[in-house]
Image 1 (cartoon, helix red, strand yellow):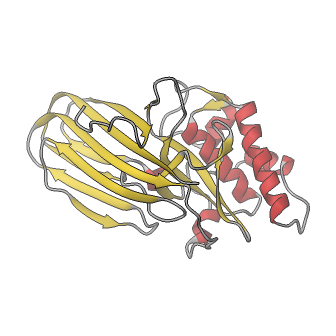
Image 2: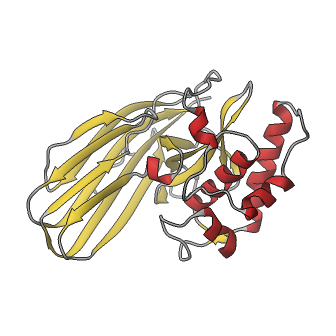
Length: 280
């Protein structure tokens, strides 16, 4: 059964003084494939600037710009219409070896190996046992770690999350990935959105993150340790990579002595309701 969603994603940057240049990459267009289709996509940057695009080594659509005039504010907004929940055949990625290696923030530390030992399936176990082990790992992270947006940041590594016993969806995805790799299971990071039904019919908040693991005979399966659930038709995949750094919605640098703040808002609603206005 397929589902459809409209997503309005806006990121606003404010600076304490004019800055002379911003260089930025954006991974905001939802992916096609694995049972998902991006039906519409619109991207807008203010101040107006010429956009370029390319597809990176993981298949993500990347847009980029170089703004070369003074500005104190910057707004990046995208509007997407996506269909999810379609059938997908198992397919092993040619770059699967990348999803077994460690690099910061997904690091190999004693706490990761201890967590892996608790969830290791029996030697020679088949796909069903591997899936069950990953399901148990998802539940354990959700149960044993507190969701707290005040304790970590985008640079926090897995060892810090293990010490704090807290974090956000990005941290839980990184911890799942590190542990799965310790089990010998290729795992990768997914950035995107999740729709959670509420009274208003709209999910408001920020972007989301979860992990996918390669299970022989089953393909890439999504595991969301934040909720905790298997990723399904309510998840919209935008970008994949080894970790957050490969799949960040926005990534860039600016030239100037000012300090800056960033504010993100995301609104997701099922198709069939009043359309999302991408300009609001």
